[in-house]
Amino acid sequence: MSRLVTAPLDSLELMHYAVAVPCFVCNGDNRHDSERCRHCYAPLALSYQVADKRATKPEMLAVLGPPYAGKTSYLGMLCDSLSRQTGRASAVSRGAFSVMLQQQVIARLASQQFPTHTPEDAESWHWNHLQIAEPKVRRVRELIFPDMAGAVMERELDHQASPITRAFLKKCSGAIVLLDTQKIERGDPTPDFFAMKVLSYLGEFSNKRSTSWRNRPIAFLFTKAERSRECFDSPRSYAETHVPGVFRQATASQKRFEFFAASVAGATINLEVDGAPISLPLRVEPRGIREPMSWMLKQLR
Image (cartoon, rainbow, N blue to C red; front, top):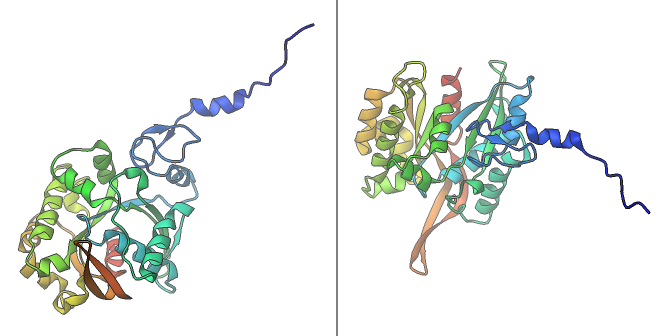
């Protein structure tokens, strides 16, 4: 009696593994059935969306800030504001992964809590891919930006070089740099130093005019500015007075830059729980959320 059996060979399925899928962010090779890039952990859905010849070529945007500067709250509120806006620039999220940050931030704020800080593990970062329609100019733009951990960027600025971070920043068309207004009001120079280091770091990338960060737009955003009327009235004058280091460096080194002020909460309360200070939003009252992005879109035309 023969023990031989016939087993079908799925050779077509094996062929998929022979063709690598390049990551849109870092260009690293990946298997076709991977969900995230094995090098930088960006969603591989970005690569498939970009491969669509009918889609507009996306541009990447860097949103940089130190830990607890309010980056996650700002990005979540920005995505929510753009998705609900009508008449002017409105956004549609491409992919379910692009909705996660918006959903989590709005849920936390609704329960009178700020979002938890972004973990350093890149696999846990939220990536956003927005398709932004501008009716006035009859143009559709696509922007990609991650919620990068502030601690990771701080290490990068201290020259603990990460090839993935550098690959991402080289591809970015512009940047939004966050400065914590509450720290500035307390006389803490940390936000000024962080922004100065960001400018110096980006200036090291290339000396060519076509690829230099000198020619790319940079928006400096004062976050948590609800308690500073001066900051909202004139962000540029506020910057010149309170963060003179970054103001002078930007004036000397950048061709396109501007200062903005924004807040997510209309009022906050500061408490101490188990010896650790925490801040809670008393009411959600977004202000100045869309202005940096509107300016950025005009600069990228």
